Image (tube, rainbow, N blue to C red; front, side, top):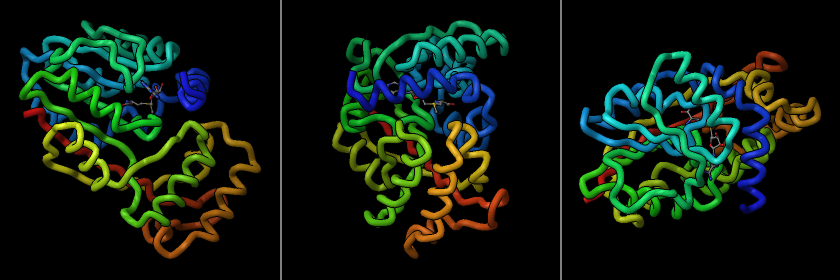
Length: 256
Ligand SMILES: C[S@@+](CC[C@H](N)C(=O)[O-])C[C@H]1O[C@@H](n2cnc3c(N)ncnc32)[C@H](O)[C@@H]1O
């Protein structure tokens, strides 16, 4: 396992319960749109990659015949299993594995989903190539993730800001860059929907148990940000009231 994946696993093991209880992960307009874009059919078999606390798998499972939920972190799988039991959602198979080397045969799934996770993967092209491989012809891929501006300098700033708070954040891409990755994997990108959420800096850093020094550094970064980054993140307020925009998108793609 690469250092970056080991770091992801270590941090998510430490924060598994927070991710199960986190309001931002438990639901919202992005999860509703993701579920809608799956166009799930009752006879389908689905795979949720990097299932985390299991919120996406639990939302989709009742709509399909079979659901497999995969994650790199055993503690997250335990937490997701616990949430599925609590919600009385049966029939989800939990599998330990890596998004970039999916432990499944070719043409196994009608649907692959992945939400709030791909920015942790060191090689997103490998992940989408793997997704294309395990999807059946005619199958659907629905991805939700954070996105960054098209401008590469502003994008680098937004990624640095995220990585300062969570060192397992590898890199978020712009939605155009994602469409290109999807096309290169042989899938056909379709509808893209953008979302923005105003996030309090205090709450955002608390979720990752950031030190006071890191919070101060993040505040300094926002104060020094370029015009392009400021436009994207739209910071407001000061001190405990400081907030900024987290931008996300959902994209659907089909395997011909
Ligand atoms: C924020 S959580 C996912 C949230 C979840 N999908 C949801 O809808 O609430 C990110 C997850 O990505 C997982 N992860 C990170 N790198 C991974 C990889 N290479 N393969 C599989 N899972 C990975 C982590 O273990 C963590 O559980």
